[in-house]
Structure formats: C-alpha cells, structure tokens
Image 1 (cartoon, rainbow, N blue to C red):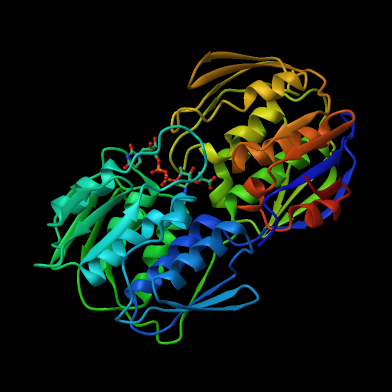
Image 2 (cartoon, rainbow, N blue to C red; image 1 turned 30 degrees about the vertical axis):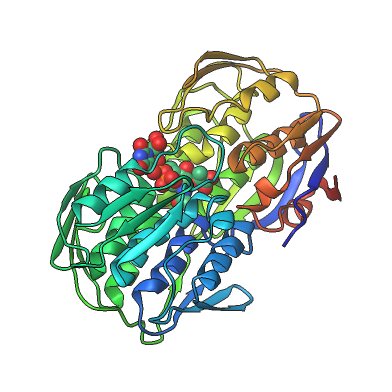
Length: 431
Ligand code: EPU
C-alpha cells in the first residue's frame, strides 16, 4: 500500500504549454471494480484483465479476501474464486472507506441469501445515500434491519425474487448491483431508468458471454432472467480504458500541452468532452484509439457552459478538471453540477490560487476567465478534485504541494511517473 501521508510537489509552468509526449490510459477503475465484484456470481475462477494498480482496486481485493475469496494478483490481472462457504459480512473498516464496495451487496445477497454492510464511504462529494439499494432489495423480498453501524439484509428464506424496479435516479452502482442480483434471482428482474455508463454495458455484455440472460443492454430498461451460477470457462473480462482518466489528461493537454498523445481512448466514451473542446476552440485529432492535442489553437480559448449529466452527457467526474480549464478561457463559463451536491466545494481553493470563481449555490458556480494561477499548498479533498488541483498546479506559477495524495492514488496509477513522462516536474514526498 502506498503511504497515506504522501504529497505531490509540483513546479508550475507559469501558463506555458510545454508538455510533450505520449501518456497511456489505464483500465477503468469503475469498470474493473464491478467486474471483480461479479466474481461472486461465478462457480469457476473469474479472470479480470487490464486492472489499474490503484488503491480502490487493492481495497476491493482486501474485502473479497476478507469474505473468503481467493484473489490471485499477477501484474494487471486478478483471478478471483469465490467458494460456496464465503462469508457475506463486509468488513466495516475497509468497506466504509470506499463506495465501490456497495456493489458487492447485490451478488452476495443473491448467492448467499444475506449480507451485512456498513454505510459505504467514498469520496466526500456530498450526500451519497443508499436508499435505492435498500428499497430495491426489500422489493426483491429481502428484509433490511438497520443497526448502529451496519445494515443486515436477509433474503435467506425464499431467496431473492425477480421483480420490476424503477430507479428514481439512474444510479450507476445501483444499476450494477441489481443487474448482478437479477442474474441469480428467481424469475425475471426488470430495471427501468438504468444508468447507461459504458462500465455498466461492459459488465452486462460480459455476464451474457458467460451465460447470463440480460436484454436491453444500452437502453434505459434491462431485463434479466435469473438462473444458476455463471461459468467463465476461461474467458477474461478485459477492462476498457478509463474514460475519466483519458478526459483528465486531455484537459491537462489542452491547458499545458505542446503536443500530447493520449491512448488508448474509446472516442465514443469521451464524446461529451470532445464536443465541449470543439465549442471552446480547442483543436484535437483522433486517430483510432489515440487522441492528440497540440498547441495550435488560433486565438483564445472560448468560454462555455458545463452541465453535468448521466452518460452520455458531460460526466460529473470531469467537472473539476474542466473547471480548472475554464479559468483560462476568456469570458464567463457557468458550471452546473447536477449529480452531487458538494462537488464544487474544491473551487474555493482554486480562488486562493488566483481563479475568479463565483459560487452561486451548492450546485452552481460562475467561472470568469482568464486569470493567472499561483502555486500554493493544497489538500486533495477527493479523487477528482485532487486531479483538478494537480492540473491547476501544473499550469500555475511557482510551486504547489498537494497533500493527501492517497485520494489521488485511489484512482490514478503511478500518476507522478506518467506525468513526468510528458515533462511535468512532479515529485512524491512523504508529508
Ligand atoms: N443516489 C441516491 N440514492 C441511492 C444511490 C444514489 O439518491 O441509493 C443518488 C446520489 O446521491 C447521486 C445520484 O444518485 O445524486 C447518482 O449517483 P450514483 O449512484 O450514480 O453514483 P455512484 O454509483 O455512487 C458512480 C461512480 C462515481 C461517479 C458516479 C456518477 C463508482 C464506484 N462510482 O458512483 O465515481 O461519480 O457513478 O457517474 O462507480 C469517481 O470515480 O471519482 C466517482 C465518484
């Protein structure tokens, strides 16, 4: 495990665009986590490839081992075997720390008839309730009992029943949780208003390849015919490239890049960002799986409006890096964060770096560019705000120290190494 007390020290470029070279994109965190959880649905070992080497993946591996699964680690491949005798009580200390663990509840409940879970943690980005999960499990025939620090969910009498579920909001992890629960439930589960994120689709397609009966992939309604445990038969889940990581690097390149190539990317997965680039007068080239951004913009970067939205809209996970970029666009750019309350709190620190950002309400800010940024000492409050601070620090004048690097390591593998490779002056130090 990387040290929890690490910090990144960055020497800024003073607004110059000098970064040059190729930067690789790792497998998607939010896809690999769910594929690893899906191992609970399999009677044979499940191989997940192209797994990013990040803290959240290690934590999920620890949770799986805690409940009795065998997790073999070989480079970027995890082979996970979940025996019949596995426990379904999630360890409080680890599960509390990251939200990804919540997706274990669906497959555990479906396979073992019960699950005990603490209130899940994750990034501090406002309220992150689990009411949709609990209500859905109750509809599927489980009883939910709330204790001081944990929920006990029990469906051991008759097993989980396939039912009709309508998600009040198209939650990503709730969709994945019920999708996996439905695979082993009795009868047919219909989930309406599901999340359409590529990670959800990749999971559903892989489960189908291994014997699940899921219809409607890529549409707002999923229908799952429940059955027995799945068999991978040696097939591997290949984690798709991380669209949020690709987007974060693209934003960095648009701000500080002379000539940067980012790959692999799936162009369809980052369309909302690329469309925004077009509007902002940021040129880019796509060639197969490579996105190239060069410093050949004629004229100023233009302001735009950002409104986060479920996929295929503008991702909330790119809102913070994009806001940094907007501080360098000439004019006013309103940013409307519609998914998470509290996911704009990091903007206050950007104003201390010299940005002109007016808070309108907890969901809205107005960015007025462009303003020179100055390096300073910052604390990474969460994963995406953390990378936004890194991007701001690279463009700023002078030195920045970004504490709590753990929050960045949760989602970005060996960030300092990869950024150094394109010319960023960044060092990891013990705090
Ligand atoms: N919501 C509820 N009740 C619930 C569940 C969710 O009201 O029971 C609400 C949330 O409060 C939020 C909205 O639904 O307002 C959407 O949240 P969602 O459930 O989709 O988020 P999530 O599944 O917890 C995943 C990613 C996040 C990403 C969001 C949105 C994982 C492990 N996490 O979270 O990723 O921001 O979808 O795309 O897949 C990150 O990687 O930095 C990250 C935070």
